[in-house]
Length: 200
Image (cartoon, rainbow, N blue to C red; front, side, top):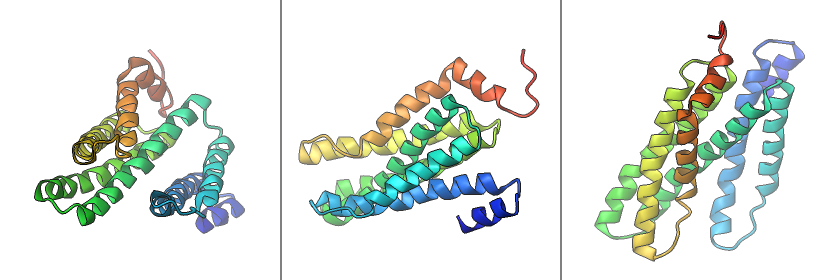
């Protein structure tokens, strides 16, 4: 954020994109500390910080003149990014607290799958903002990682504890995003934003 402020002060072209990256990372770092205390019924003081991070993120996109449809798409990709990362964190917690061997193996295997899914979602989000041609393939990659990792953990939680798991929002949102990214209309919308696009 400090680098972005410096860039804006110097009226550098890269300042907006660096500021958007900072806001995206700020959302994750503010959301992460909410989960542990909330899971045991304690207050989550960083919830306010997460709200400020969200306002900053939307503010950066509005300042950048990003189209509303793109903002909505980026918002859901941002949610998938945060939740996929959290699935990876939660699998570490389960690995430490569930003693059985089979769940240990599933938690270990899916942990990095979910983190890579979160990273891929973040990369695809930045790619959309930078109008890159590789956005859809990276988005499909991110969705598949989050789907495979998240549904596996959600199913395992249901088997072990008999309840709907918080592992499931990430793969459910990723499934919806996968379907959306595969639609010809979505691909055409993203293609039109690429530099040098001349239409059909």
